[in-house]
Amino acid sequence: MPNRLTENLDSDFIERLNALRPQNARISVKVYVEGYEDVVFWYDILREYGRQKNIKFDITPYSKANDLAKGKSAVLEHVDSTGKHLILCIDSDYDYLLNGYTPDSIIINSNQYIFQTYAYSIENLKCYRESLYDVCGNATTNFSEKINLSELLKWYSNIIYPLLLWSLYFASKNDTDTFTISAFSDLVKILENPDINTQCESTIRSVSQQVQTKITELKQTHSTDIQQVELLSQQLRELGLNEDNAYLFMHGHTLFDNVVLMILKPLYRELRREEIRKIRENAEHQTERENQIDHYNNKCKNIEDVLSTNTDFKPCFLYQKIKSDLDLYIQNFN
Image 1 (cartoon, one colour):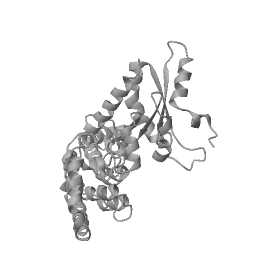
Image 2 (tube, rainbow, N blue to C red; image 1 turned 135 degrees about the horizontal axis):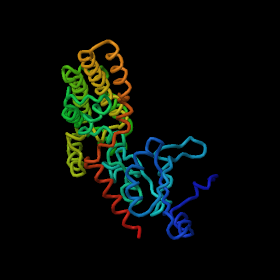
Image 3 (cartoon, rainbow, N blue to C red; image 1 turned 180 degrees about the horizontal axis):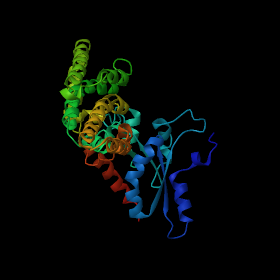
Image 4 (cartoon, rainbow, N blue to C red; image 1 turned 90 degrees about the horizontal axis):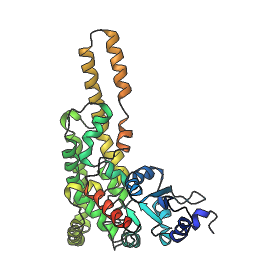
């Protein structure tokens, strides 16, 4: 039995409360998100709509009173309460791509008051490959292009794409044993410190070797499924999944922590060393050198923090899908 007023809220109840407010008061809309890290992401998107229609989006990272149920499953418990004044904002995981294959995917993709990332999670969007150059530059104030990060992540994406298809295929069959998302993630992680001077080539080729080995194994042990995997790939292309953007649909924390940050951290260190070398070469005396180095170090930002707060993914076609959904939703308000 719910023991909190907020657990009894539904859209109709909030709408009735809004009707009691003064005429010019802001409209209140309740928004449930999965966790605290999701609040800023969704607030940044929703605030534009709030200004348009004088709406106050009350964003709440939802958890049950006993703190045992959190995240997406807890948010989806409110699906029957949704409406114009109560919306849910969640990570897609595989549910966007596998619409119709799982019960959750049907609920999420058919409810106009559930908004999803379309990418696997918000972490994938923060790792949008076209934005990574600026992430490093903003963290170090050094915009030297030691590596073409966009092309590097595109190469990585092409490597993991066929294995991602197998992962999606087994998920579409509700097979949680043969090849799990966790097993996929373990195979596509970067486990060694990349060599920036060689464009991380050895590191990426190591991932490629692991992926190819697993694909060969799957084709041998599940030869009768190969045609079905190919058929699924054709269906998913219509939803936007292809070789170049597969990284947007893989497990988000794996991409963020075990791929992108693994590349950015050594690049970050090299960019900082380069700037400090310039200071040492140009300073006229020791005191100036020390002061400028201290000043530079104070200006640098933690690379993980900059990536975590990255919002330069808005040209991504998946972000545009989020905006299109919200454009339709906001038309309901007079």
